[in-house]
Length: 412
Image (cartoon, rainbow, N blue to C red; front, side):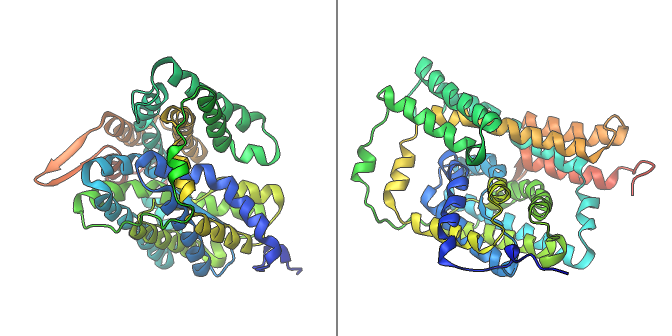
């Protein structure tokens, strides 16, 4: 049997430019999460790089995957920062990584089918939908200027946000080559240029910022409420991890579920997420944009992701990058978010559709209905100092209903 040497780990200087290109593909989405949630973009760059390197060590350099900021956690991070501050929220994010690690241990003992039994698409699909729909008012508010820094409001905000939205749509549908992989970056860039033309950008923070600056690393502070609120949110992206691993495997022609094993890829993702929280960064997840770039360039060598990680770490110490990102007006981000959060909802719908289940059966109707209404409606459960609501509560209710409701004929 011939061995495809393209998929073997080979660390060479010649791949450094390819690695920088992979980071460029991920850059727009990577910094979007910290910008929206109040975290430091430079820290996010650093934790994406460190997380990717940790992932490669655990998976023995076999999988060409880049880890960076997870969109699934935007809502809980935003709520957590307002409620408990950044250190308390980071405690919940670190615990989310521990959940991934627990899942990896369960898979190692029971096999990958165990999560499918307890967390089937009828649970994870609606939870993903709730994540997108809960964020919808935030996207619209930022687009019209009613939410954000208040610098741009009214018709100016709508013009800028719609330019960013339309550009993102056009590039994602009609863009070719590398452009099709960076619609978010294109949308932000176009919205920024329009804002600049309207005289709404203040460059003084960029001018005054130092070239070299240590990122604002922040350590977690113990907060049980944050853990209870955030950990259930991690259920959906943990399940999505399987799809991401299968996707990159189909691109390279390798079965990564078996070698290095999904239990190890999940472990790498979990440790990377917890490690990111200890530095003050957002949770990590596998980036589909980068997987798409791998498919486009046929650059299957996992060492390319090592170079992408190194580039991310080096850029994290460039102070002007963080200062420049801070000048992006809220309506620009709002326009991109309208599409982005809608896409998260559609991913949830697609999860249900691909499962091929009849949602009209009483059992499926009950699970999906309860998750959607309780999550989108903002239901909250409190008992003393304990409180859980929205996405977290919806996820737990779905998990419990799936366990206690009698299974229908034909279910495994």
